[in-house]
Length: 287
Image (cartoon, rainbow, N blue to C red; front, side, top):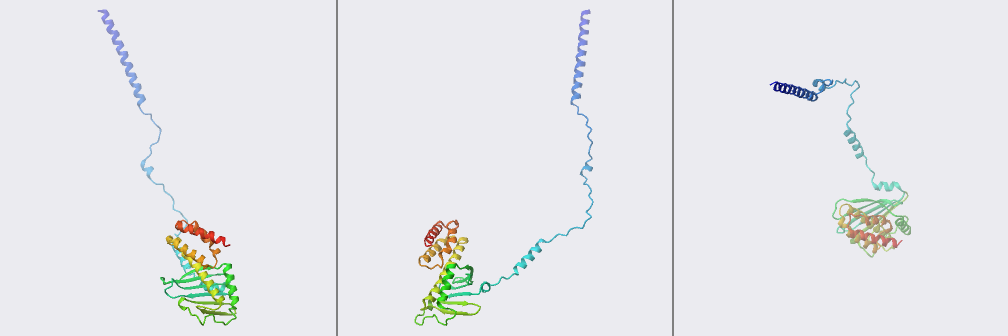
């Protein structure tokens, strides 16, 4: 009986110790899980969202500039600038004024041509096409070779001091067009008109101006084709080839820079570029 009591007491003591140990361990875990108190100051949301007050600027308020009005004013001023006609510029730029006019029947592709320039070769060419109502005008700059030919022919004709009429009395080719040539200096001025002449110098002078017109009208048309109608380039190259074979270009060497550009211009067809390359080689051989 005493042994049983002793065992019971031992068991009871052990159970109490085990229970106290488990309780202390549970309290330790609970302390570890509880969040630590922070000393951060709480922020009032009203104070945080309230914007800071700024003092108004005391200086004068700048006025907004109207940029468009200034630009439009400048454009208006530019539009009011009127350029002097090229004919006046040609007359004022030198002492001599050269004028060539050719009027052909209305069924011709080019119905009228007018070339005016000074003694340095600067001027313009104006021409009319049968399918267009408006004139086409382009600046030109004659080469030294062309000017030498023109001046030598005027001297051979003694143009300003002569009263000779160049129109042939035996032949009349007015159905092929009429040529008018004028030369004006500060002292004298003279104009002649003919459709055929027995004087070879007069015919050569008209032919030289016709070659000049062929050259610069072709340059205008090929540049137009490069920009807007590249498929016309092969046809225009064939025309230039025909001009060169018939000696209908005033100065082929003057056209070399343009032809060399055409060789590398990918806007026009390859056949036209190759044709331009052949013409460049052909012209260089004649140097």
